[in-house]
Image: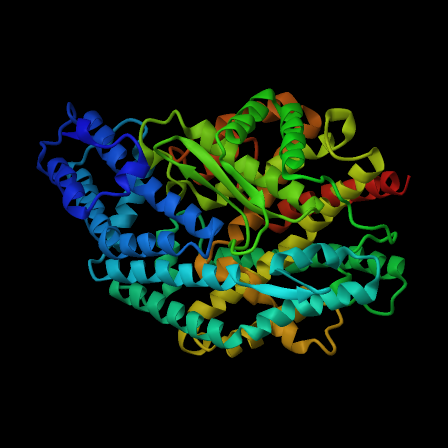
Length: 573
């Protein structure tokens, strides 16, 4: 009967559960043996891929236009009527496979994750998980409607970002206060949404037999290779190794700017008073020049990116009623990736396309794996998922100049690379703050349901990890700063992966500095493994080591600082 499944997710999205259920019944009724398991898996994969792509396409529709009431209505209906039934049916199919004792070739690692899923599943949670997705949609609506008044115009909140790089200190201060003042304006709405998120997550954890949501989420994220205490040790390593390095950068920044103290709106401005880089004039130019950069890293990456361009799988420009942030999602029936961004004309947009491009190349590399359970984002260690993206930022950086069809002169490219390397270095303390906040939140679910108490906890983390900034007069904005981080609201605990992956990516970059072709081959070999290998093995295949101790961190910091020093000379030339 699986021959009658639709070939496209668009068609499948019109189906009711009564049309879908017989396919699950068929899977559950079939004898499952060593001789039949491959065909059975292929059919299950086809059905699961359709459901996954429907979800992804609804996500794309509701984030590219948060004012699209019809897409919102259809997605809400899907979450109410299809998703809970599908979750329950998927659980029964997983249990059938696990009970069989069969371990198909290439399915050993996914089986470990399916066992974790089976242990977590509770019928009572299916509707709660749907509620959490709807709360996430509500957060998107709130962020998508985040507009501000700026110099006589109403603009999306995110479009203030370039003004944080304005050479005029008063103007960037005004932009910063406008930006974070908007977060304060949303306090009441966000506080209600946050309380609902925390209490619902705690209920999900309790239903599954866990004392707190962190323990539940750790298992849900398949964190088999490290513990919450290891994460806290990473925070401590960053505080000891990275914070001093960032303080050295910040002291040079303070001196170059000629100010008595660094204010939060001094973090992004060019130290020589030059205006922000304006790398492109149109979205087409951004796409075309990024394709040229990818071509220099390896021609296959340019070919894949051009495929996305021709198939309209890029939505890069910022506009009203578009959710904030950026992402790359895989369409697992079409076996294509989709990139979403909010480009506003800065170098950060170039970095975003390089970053999300790395994710897209991961999706292309995995496309040949036979089963969707080997390709699903949630079946790949998140700590590796961000390695391809962050590594691509570093691998593409040498080719930003017009010599390679890129964006800049040599001096401008050095500025751009400096901005990225400084950002990488400064990111680790910020990541530690975001992750540490979430540990506190789910260790104290009663207190943390109060948004104000989270604000207070964030302020203590700022004092530890960002000791160089003077927050006098903007104490309320300091406390509210974390509220811009959508991961905390929508994807709990999905943030430390960026810091871990950054360390892995820098190791790949170090390999490329010695032998780029070999480093790229190893990189692509690791991407092609998808979810069929363990986290340490994925890193090892890519030519890196999964580690976050002080010594490994110190080597990465020394490499970053050395290149920063070299690029500073070129940038001033």
